[in-house]
Image 1 (spheres, one colour):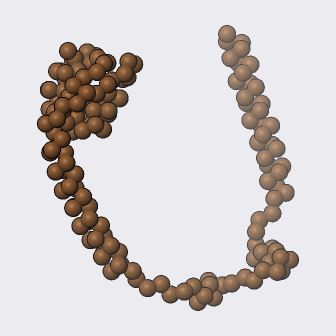
Image 2 (cartoon, helix red, strand yellow):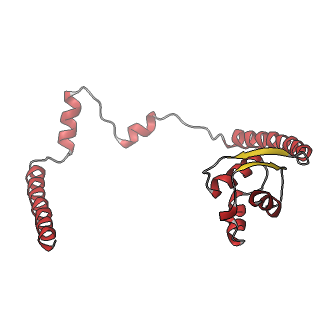
Image 3 (cartoon, helix red, strand yellow):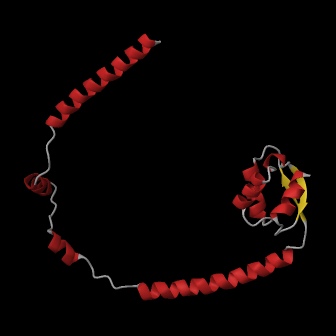
Amino acid sequence: MRTNLRAFAIGILFATGVMGVAYSIVSAGATTLNEESVQAYAAENELHLLSKEEYDELLPEVEPVEETKTEQKEDLAEESNSNEEEKTEEVQEETNEPFEIVIPDGMATYEITALLAREGIIEDDKKFDAYLEDNNIATKVRSGTFTMKKGMSYEEAAEVLIK
């Protein structure tokens, strides 16, 4: 075992040395860019070089558009507020209606809590995971078909899932 390990280490050292020598040979022949080589390249390819001042002069002047952005944000905020009010009214109407939810075999607890949060049964899947862990019932969650309601408390949802 020791012999194999030493041979492997020597091989790595040898390979690193060879690559270092090859890199130094290749990089010695590389040229660096200077102003003359850039001008020669531009002349060969019929390109025109600009100074920073010339470039800045050619740029179009940009007018500030902050006023329109704030107006758009206000409009979006008003629309989202009205949409949220409609959604909360719909959720309140649906809250008292029980429905069946299917939890397939093999789902992990975090997947189940994410599903419940997505369906609106619980408020926050991460907090529900923590609740299950804190009460040592995360391993007791079962798969199957359950009758649940939207907006259930963590205690109610856990009680349904572990029966």
